[in-house]
Length: 361
Image (tube, rainbow, N blue to C red; front, top):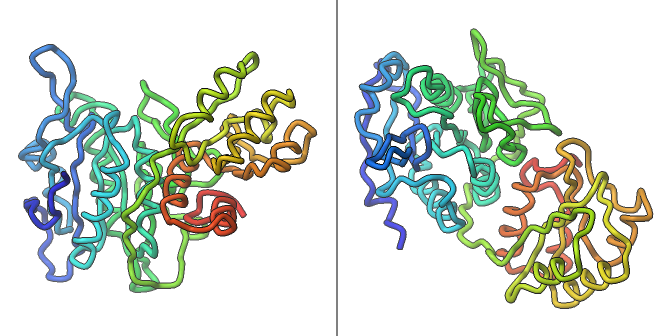
């Protein structure tokens, strides 16, 4: 059972904040390479992130008030599950009124999924929630942890120079000097520092000598009371097509007991086989109420169902076109929308609609 957010202690980090109105940022450590250490077996494993100020003296020079909240059991991001997303959303909701922004330290492997999930769960978000981490542990030589974390904190605290509003009221992923929308991020690299990209949407900000924000790319929605959703439908799957895929494989995925939705990773602009057995398998799934969301395997471009004959049949079967959504954002969107308990017409509408900047209208 997840702990009560009110029971988790906050540890203030020493910084140069002297003004009473200095921005307040909550740093949430969930685990990941940024806080890993070598264990007895010689493997990198999550550790408790203690005395962060000693490992990163740069923090002491920030004109911010930073509080650290470390989860009781830091985890490798490969072990992150939907229940963790729900807890982190609840955690941010609990502390929302007390901080100007939030930074989530997270492992890189599933960071894009987590950022997308929090984007959906935190409706009417009006403050920054910045995910970041590192390719090397904070104590390693040449680690990217210091630069990523310090800049993420600055972004979380940034305010618009021409208005008394936060600069980025969104969930984002900051890595290697680039801030990406949470629903657009995709991990593309495991050996270089530039771990994430957003192929179909421009960055929200870039960090050089200064921070350069792309105000035209940042979502600024009408102010509303934060709503923290607390339900996700986990009965979802991903089916990636490939030449030679068999009926047994397709039926095995689409026939999983309790399946409510499936992301179809198709070719090009949303194309798929026209073989009778394949279309029949999709039709059976739809008849059982399984929602199918069509996402392209291409990292750039978008799904346009009906552009080719090989995708027209999908639309006829009730498959929803995913436009230029990423697989990560599509999986979490299915979980979110199907968890709302809506009727079929509304589900279809929301799956095809831009909810958190995940697709280009």
